[in-house]
Length: 63
Image (cartoon, rainbow, N blue to C red; front, side):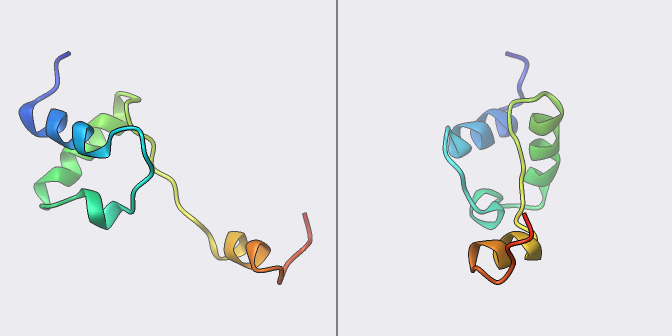
């Protein structure tokens, strides 16, 4: 409730799955919509760090 048409469309496109950001945002204007969805707690944004990749590749085992 209370979502703009752009926000609702973006949220529907995201759904319940993980997506690369570049595949979700179609226009620069959608970045603001995404920020509002994040602010409302409807979407989470995450990223992978170089140390995450090194751990997965077995190059770091410090943890």
